[in-house]
Image (cartoon, rainbow, N blue to C red; front, side, top):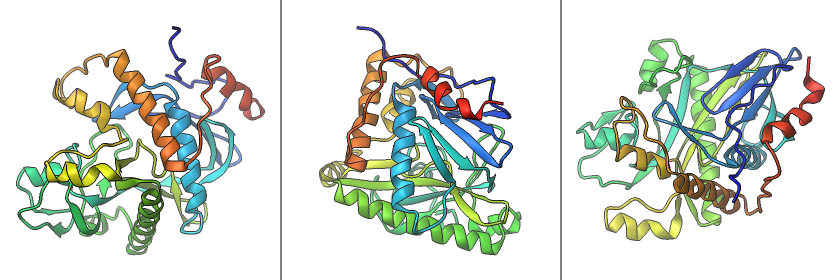
Length: 316
């Protein structure tokens, strides 16, 4: 059986002003728009772990579903979709604060509220959590846990609303706006996910400002990469047993890596091929469950070839 094609890199020399992120490749166009290509790279612990077949297209098309379902809540950056892996968006000045909304005491990273809670912290992100909470317990109300947005690949750091304002990262008006948008987006995400048998446990949002200073939702929204989804009917039993509910998120690979090394310091072990394929299946299943739509897999050739053809009108 031939290996499935993956998009591990999206360098297109005919396109201008390239910026390579952990997962996405970006090209700034002279007209003020940006080409954003989602590769199949999977990132966690501030590192690239592997490439997952079809992941980039799944993320782009899942975000497309959510951008369309939340367009009435706040403006987003989308202009068009010339290819399943590609979105043309308005170029924004990204705000230096990443907005994470959490509905449950969960997570595995150093900035997650569960990690901090297990370490004995009770005051975090400007709020105080009570003693006696259990892993994956539902919070009384969704909690915004902002972190610094490190553009140079450094570690994101937890922030409180007071620190955000004192450090001048956002104005009071900007903070109020992104908070209002984030909570409304999260509520919509939880409601639509519940209808499809899913729990949206937590997610991250990135916002930027356009040329007129308006705050606009950027990047992605409610995808398996940016969010923690649980299978709803697995939650009660898992919570009672102190286990993690069945999920679609990056913890599928994160957990495997975390068991074998310190992912922030040690070399990352090679991810087994069967785990890569299982993860690909998880992303495809997540798309079907989140959107209620089927996903057409393109296994014919190198994805970069079809991306280049779709973006030919934008070549310099």
